[in-house]
Each structure stands twice: as C-alpha cells, then as structure tokens.
Amino acid sequence: MFDIREDDLSGEQTRALLALHLDRMHAFSPPGHALDFSGLATPEVTVWTAWHQGHIAGIGALKMLSSDTGEVKSMRTHPDFLRKGVGTAILETIIATAKKRDLRRLSLETGSGAAFDPALSLYHRHGFETGDAFGSYTCNDFTRCLHLDLR
Image (cartoon, rainbow, N blue to C red; front, side):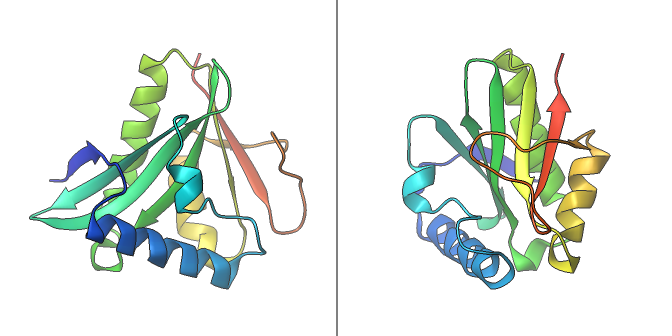
C-alpha cells in the first residue's frame, strides 16, 4: 500500500511534513525533544518516507548510536493518513534495517500524555519495552525511553 523509500530531505513534501512534526513536538514537548532538519541530515542518520499515490504519508529515521545500537527518530504520520498503517510500515522498515546492520538493540525516547499514546501503542505492539534512559537522555515525568532487543 505504501512505497517506503530512503529520503534525502530535499523534497518539498518531506520538508513540510518535517516542519509539521517539529511544530507538533514543540507544542507537546519540552525543548530539545525533537531532532531538527540539521540533526537528521547527518551521515549517521537514515531517513525513510512513506508515499501513497504521489503524496507523503509519513517519515521516520534510524540514527546509529554505536556499531550495535540504533535509535528510532522523527516518526510522524501525515494527518491525512492517520490510522492507516503508515507508522507500522516505517517502523517495520527501521527494524528490518537494524537487523540487516546486525544491531543488537534499538532504542527511542518519546514523551508521555495523550498526544503520545498512539506512538507508545505502536512501539509496544512491535516489542519495545520501557527501560532506562540512554545516551544523553534523562528520565523525568515527561520522558519515556523504550528499547527493543534484536538478538
């Protein structure tokens, strides 16, 4: 149903969806909880977008933290495609790529509250479990860190 492809962040639709993502993250999150364009456009980050009939449906990324650990970043479904499987398609692409790269773990940091419930549900359905903070993240009332063991 969706065409999932690596994205170089140069297209107008991709940039618009990323801008929407950042606006929503800033509306529902404390500062510093979203990777901006410059953070996604680095060699250690691979970005994918989902497309349907020429329209962008979603975005997501995998950031390499080390040779055996990756982080899921910037997951966002376009409002026109909510609850149609976009998040699942992107997340499954990220997980499959992580396995091909022989990673042992995928981690992610997200928020809590009603705005984040759909994302948390998606991650839990795919086997992610709540765990300790990682990298430069700290645990607090807002932050949720999740991990998926790929071994």
